[in-house]
Length: 321
Figure (tube, rainbow, N blue to C red):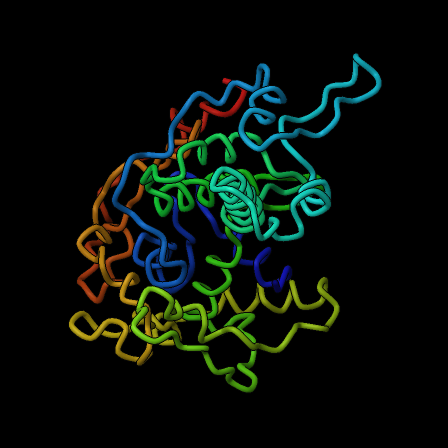
C-alpha cells in the first residue's frame, strides 16, 4: 500500500456525498468496482445481525471448538474477537487427512473469518479478527451480500479517517481503494512489473482472475512518505478531467474486454451497478450514490447532482449507539 497516496486521497473525501471532491469532479468507488476488482456478490441478504458481544467466548467455542483465553485481570476489558496470531497458531496447519465433515467445516469457517478480517473488514489496528464476522459464517451456505457490506464498511472508514485529527490509521478494504485509484488516477500509480501467468483451471471459469490481477506485480514506493504526501497533494490539486481515466474497464458495451481471461463473476451482476440504495453492514448504513459519478459509467453527469446528505443521521449510528 502507498500510504502517502492514500492519505492525500482520503483528505478529499466528503462524508456528506460519499465521494472524493477533486478539481476534475467527484469520484468514488462504486458497486461496479466491487464486482470488477473483488468479484464479490452483490445480490443476497444484507449482512445484518445482532452484534452484541455478551457471551462471545462461549459462542465461539460452540462454533469452532476454542476461544482466546480471558484476561487474567477480571477488570480488564478484552475486545470481542481473536488476535490474528492466535488464529495462525491454532488453525495455521490444514486439518488431519482423516478429518470428518464437521472438522473440515470448522477449518473452512476459520479460514474465511481470517481472510475477510484481514482484507474486507480490517480495522485500523490490524491485529484482531472481530467476533461478529465469524458469527456471520455460522451457516456457511448463507448467501450474504458481501459486496454491499464491504463497500459500506469502506465508506464508513473513509468517513472517520477524513475527519481524524490525531494519530490513527484507516481500515476497510484498502486493496479495493488502491486498485480503484491506480486504474483512474496517475497520482501515486505504481509501475507494473513483469506480468505473472495465472494458473488456469480447466473447465472452471469461477477460478479465473479478477480485474485486480492486472496490478498483481507492481513497484513499491520507497521515497520519504512525508515528502511524497506533499507531492501527491499538489498533483491532486492540479488534476484535470482530461487526465482522469473515467472508464478503465472499457466502454459501456465492452466492459472487461481489456482482460481476456476475466472471471465471469465480475460481470454477472452489472444490473446492480447503478442502483441508488442503502448499503448495510451490521451496524453501518451508508448510501450508494452513483448518480454523482455518472462519468465513471460513461454517461452524462448532471450538475449539480441531486443532493442526498448522508452525514447527519446515518453517521450517528455506530457500534455503541
